[in-house]
Image 1 (cartoon, rainbow, N blue to C red):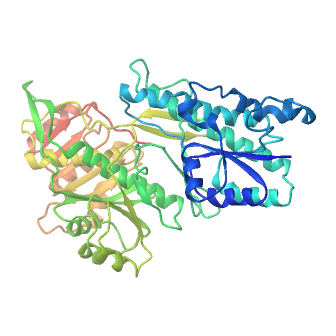
Image 2: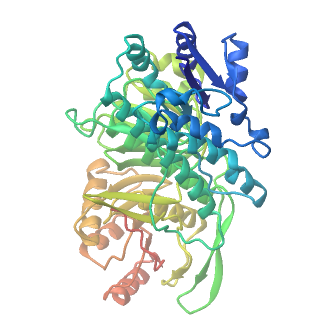
Length: 535
């Protein structure tokens, strides 16, 4: 009996070895398109399968190939030879894989590319192969070719292996279909942010070296698109764990948010305490390097500066004697000078656009994992996994849409820019959070506190512990809160220690008292009326 294998792959890993094995063991390969071109170059014998050729679909009838796939299920083997199938009496191996994709933006001219008949015809071949999985070995993952060759060589294909492969085929089909559906829905003028079924085609990128704890298992999945902080990662370290990847993601997401919001000139409509309306202008971050330190998805330090080395030094201000395995994110290429300063620190990984050759040589002597990423990017959504469900929402990407300058004095330009920087950091800190900044450097941060008052109290204690005796007598110049905070003893203490500006949501019962206190002590305060709750 003739043994036929239908091969149409977009992922070429391991396919040449598998195809040569099939030919050597008496199989006939049916193929077309790019797979046919590959086999021609490698001189692997095959038979051209016209129904796989996209350009002939409109003049040919591809239904016979589907009938061929089902023949061994619905046609008696004795009658199979009489069936009117031009190419084969049966197909026993279907090796087909597709690359699920999803695009956030799609022009009308690109719509036909995502809805063309050929795409769905190929996925239909997999669906019909699934119907006959007892007789067809369905291979959609190059990682399964080796086991398939072993079982084919011994002529002992187990039922369990067939069911496993058939299930993986359905898994690929669902990812392929959801990618196209989400692309079309996200780009439709009629769609909403939330579809009836949440089905994103997340692609397995890497099995990780343990979960949050070593006894757990974990894996990294990513969008098959340009969206998300991890989508641009070029290459991950051989051994990297769940916690490190989580910290890398937060670090790069925050860097992306900084540059997405502050790279270009922008303004916010503002209102004075006397009702006068005006526009507050922000200075774009041209030629500025941003560094951030993260541990267990908590921001430990952050700074803006004119070069990598200085930005890192200002960032590395937390209690480094007690805190190790920190992830450092940097918006610029890491050079040798910065690498020298980083090499002897308790850093587990650094994520940056790239590393100079000098920097790489310095890091070779350390255990620090170097992670390069290709682009500034953020996902438009955030997801929290619950026990039995998901919380899905649009990303908190708006710093503020209006400023109410509630004190008599407006903030100076350097404080205006620092307020934007502080709010962006607060958007990545877990609520309740309070941040203290000085010269575009994070000098204290408290997050995941019981209340806004607790957050302010905790950040005051932390800043004093880190810098108990500042040379200029100023502990910090700016206080940033992610929600409304009332006037409390800790705020009075901060004002005594040099804080001259506060930005918060506003809306507590002590607002009037708070404003009067700020005016009496020459402190500028801005209410945004926009909270940034982060769970």
